[in-house]
Image (cartoon, rainbow, N blue to C red; front, side):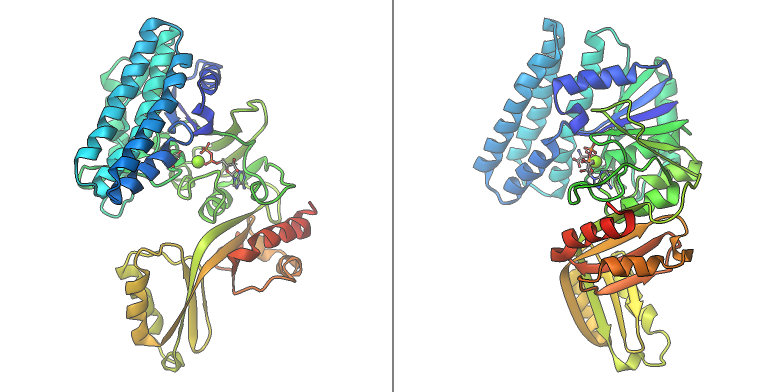
Length: 439
Ligand code: ADP
Ligand code: ASP
Ligand code: MG
């Protein structure tokens, strides 16, 4: 079994869906096809949610109407027969019935999660009916019946695997199974999601659940590039990465992959390929257990980071101080990304500001607390780069002009991370591109 995931742009227009059909019928291998919502849809659903939270029903209704209108020509052009068209139209009408229904209730995060799930339900049903219309047999698998997360929002891989296998076994055996990325159920059984960009994560989880031969992530670029192509002009694709390199790049901001994508595939050793729907024969990136090459493979950046410094002379020669500080973050379930210490101060970074006020209040008891928002973590990633002579110097030479707030070296063997102000990010990424890759 293979898993093929197609992102929003890859299913963003009827002709793109036709391309997806081409790509999934190039061989006879059995496959699970994981689809994102049509591009722009999840963003629109987020906006609708914001209007409904703000109790602005008129605006909510207007945004819903606009999104509904977007699907009309889509459906008209995707299907060639009356029957296909009427099935597609009924998918859209049913889903928008659910969306419009939310105007009638108090809008809480439960309703919001239900709203956000509609995008993938629409795209996968439309695609399934499209395949049906042109005589390609497929089965539509409801992700909400097998994909789940626990109280800590961690995917329940064993349960997912059991349920998915039994769903597949219970019905007709076909070559193509179509399912929704992103959506899942939470510990309360409610509709939930794997966070923005989560369809990649779905693909990897499905791959691990079925012990798939390979997971292919089809997107709008020819693989993982050595630097952020949205920020830096001269970037190039990387042919091969090992799991640890790819996991660090995804976690530290390479948007091509949801931050948690790699872990499930790595657990079972399933290779992950990043491929380009717009250029299907491009080599892309293969991510596997094998290491290739040396030096920094790529640079990624994660924005909107908050740096917190706690300064206290009580820390001098004291033990137990760190534990108390970490306990505060644990209490508020807020992960720490970077950390540096001196005799009398500890600095750390977080990217989740949900409980920032409570955290600061509790940290106040331990010393003077300083908070700097608007920071960026820039990570230079490559297998075992911390052992490479002169590499740190190259990194800091390139960043000569840029004030550096924190440095993390040696925490991972594969990563040198630097904390800078967000306003210096573009300059830093460009300078590192020149300094490390001569681009
Ligand atoms: P999809 O909708 O297919 O999931 P995304 O927009 O989530 O696609 O991810 C693909 C985008 O990721 C690319 O268009 C590119 O702009 C961006 N990106 C950021 N960093 C990188 C990188 N290092 N390599 C490749 N793409 C990157
Ligand atoms: N549709 C979701 C999003 O836009 C999930 C995904 O595309 O991966 O975030
Ligand atoms: Mg994505």
